Length: 302
View (cartoon, rainbow, N blue to C red):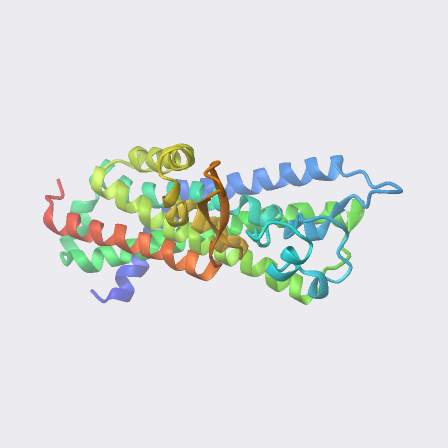
């Protein structure tokens, strides 16, 4: 069987699963609920413009009259005397991006490979495609693509649901071509991160033969990592995949912890830019995928 047909069959298997359809419906429902709540609670007045469309990408304050001219940058952030750690486009879309990518990427990636062992279908697939490396490449690609598409759809739904509040009970001042380009780029980078998280979760599910272990592992890391890093592993912060994922999504700086003068503790400073942060997250995903290849090639499928 050609690799294109193999990839197509894996995509069909993914789309046929109730999980994929259920996530899409859940995203639509949550998007409508969020949009209605924001619309109801947006109250413009003499001193308040209501919900600003630019809040989708920037929370640094003020009505932005021209996004192309006043778009937050690392230079403007420093010019006003704020932290040298540039948060990037950390508005609503960027703010929820990492959490949505981790959640959806973990669920999609883990369930896609975990279900193969739960229902015993992996043996059937190997009957007509015994070359395990080709099969794993196809499965990892589908885990990446599925996680990325569902996550981008979710973020786009949230942004679309908030738009009526800006049009009828707020302002769209500042929205121009650059704004839409930035919005699409943030959504796209969120999808990439979700796809990489999907590959990581798929590997954990493959190694443990269990979907729940992968999902709980990723969520557990999300909860415990910051506590452990801040308490004992301060120098690891710059390498933390979650911090780097957030920096890549928002086009901001990845942080590092440095000793304060006088030994009074630790403080955050800029470590590296968003492209380096994205490359680091990709390396983590590649390392996990490499482990998955080794385990799958050497283990009994039963």
